[in-house]
Length: 200
Image 1 (cartoon, rainbow, N blue to C red):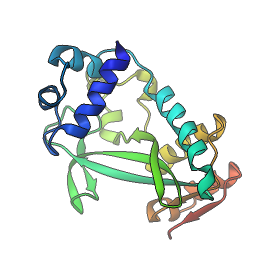
Image 2 (image 1 turned 60 degrees about the vertical axis):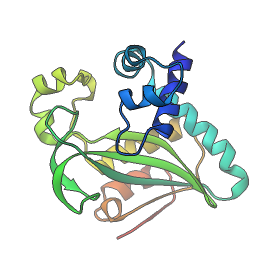
Image 3 (image 1 turned 90 degrees about the horizontal axis):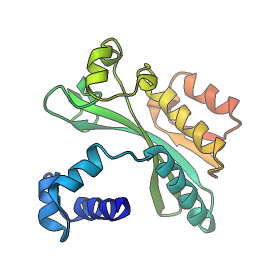
């Protein structure tokens, strides 16, 4: 079943050696898994990742309530990549290496309270050069509705708005200077009626 494949995939991520987490290594570590079916599950099978993340966010918010005020942290992370085919890959600033590098960049939300934290949403940043090349986007499997340029603060606001619209509880938003410098992000949060603490 799809649930079994999801469990095998997650188990593979945790069991496979860091830096070597691909389907082949996962299958070696997870008993009962098969390369073809696991590859199909992660690459081609239809599943609602956004719906899954929303359910996760609701569950995390409920679990964190006993631990005090819940913060919604927005931050980005670069994932270094070789080649040109991975969605959103480009030469761009990578905080991971501290320089311009070939990478993908994603914006993440996490909910935190006390010493606990969990990822609750994410969006892959599409550089302008991808947006300007619809054929490349189509070949990479990006849905047409997603081929729209958005800044990282805009992606963060979209996810926060989605949390609010779906009843995910948090008490404030926090972020670093990328979100605190300029007014785009803070004005967006004000319009949503959200308290925030941002680095400037």
